Length: 160
Image 1 (cartoon, one colour):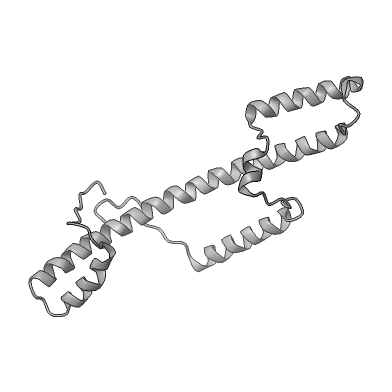
Image 2 (cartoon, rainbow, N blue to C red):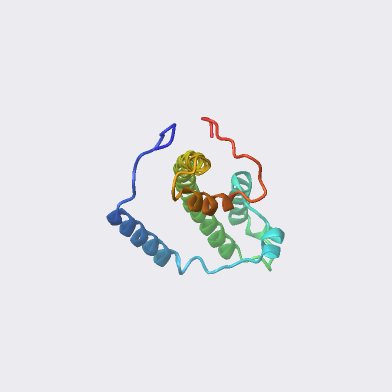
């Protein structure tokens, strides 16, 4: 246990299986929709739509539907409305996934921090035992110290 134990839970095998099944279901449901795979260059050059742009696009497409004579002949208004609806629907999904991803990231970060803090405390204990010539500890210390090549002392504080 680390010095500041903010989290003490586990994901059970049943939960892990349910999560994997839920992700598989989500991938299956979204497979017909998520057909685009942009390159880095494509991502950079593609117009982006956020909250403000979404409102602009909605308003523009509404005006276009009311004033079809203002729509250039090379613009397919029904396709533009379909694209806009898909973008809006995907944005809602994106927001939900982003919230979930942030929660997973935050929880994983705290769990990892606590595990790393505990490992550093144990490492320093092994290092001290090795310096005191406790049998068997030198091999363990030599193996673990490879994590810190070329570094000076590893300092641990309660805030870490």
